[in-house]
Length: 90
Image (cartoon, rainbow, N blue to C red; front, side):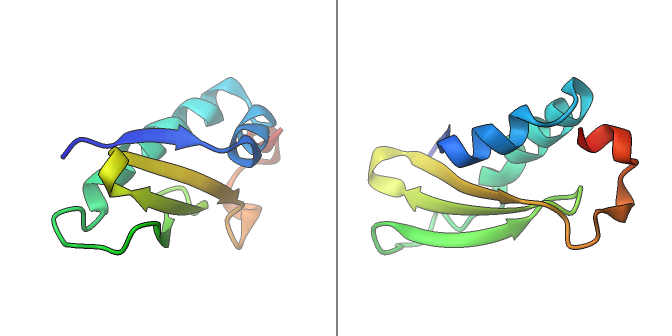
């Protein structure tokens, strides 16, 4: 089943604070997220989880399998934001 991504307003606000190149990187990582999810299994409606992206950012999500929707509810900075040059975070 193909999933559509939906970004909550909180995620959009975080993304809007980054440079264009950083946004593109994060959008590519977020776009690859559905491949890693257990969508073939029977999951309870509104199943939630958290994933760590390759960049170290953490994303919380809610899977709405019946609607074919992966709702990204929160995007959190890497635990050690020293892995990015400061200019890429602004």
